[in-house]
Image (cartoon, rainbow, N blue to C red; front, top):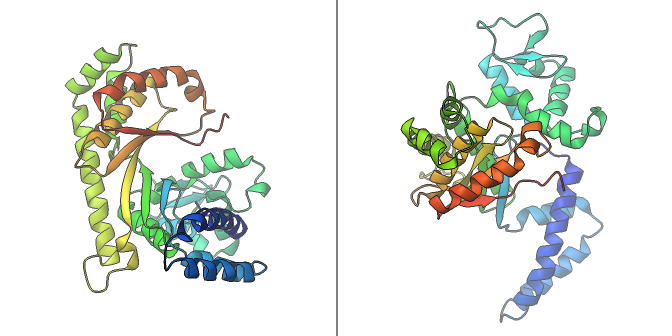
Length: 336
């Protein structure tokens, strides 16, 4: 999700100082490196009062990994506006929620064509503010609420754009010299909904961990993981085509290593959450899969999330031994 330049600079400066200070002790002990390290440190000191020079310096620095990156939240709002216009989507000019029109080129009376924003500067900036954290202080919401609400507003712009989103994400990483990304997403989405969630809704939840797992398997939960693997492969194929990976014209971002974290929507019903956990853990347990972990997403202070927190932990406790290679990552910890 788009961040303000000041926030980005502050964050990068903080990490740069950590890297420089921590690396100095180890690098200075290596022959041939001490001179280069001192030169870099001296230059950094000389530009300390020049934010533009600091930004240029930090952009050139090699980075390690971006380990908590929501794919849909990593795309700039400006790009979503372009895609919404391409798709012929509609925008509610009061709530800034995108919508798919009931019939082509026919928006409801309280909506405008999203393409209007490309010629209406007021609507354009309103959509950017609503779909990102830019100017959130003026939104009348807390930063927490504005952040979580934004995903629902631009959602339709992401439909069938996974490959383009992946290309945008790695291009952004490459511009900052990030060499590895773990992108958080829901792997098993289909045109009619999330496969695992649909199976979980059908099976339901009766409080029996083993019994519900058996029912999920009987209803084809393995197919959800297979859908996830195919979706990721299709995404990467499109990304490679867009970036010309494997050709002499390959974009620099083709060298960024990509791995995935399967999302579990913890504010869903217990049956859906359990089914998503099973799918995410199965994908992360597969040595051939690029999914490395699963993660419970959405606001921790959501009603279902709070009411079912202990149940979710019990679900994970039961399932994890069945998928020994799978990892579980932590979300933001809003309640703490």
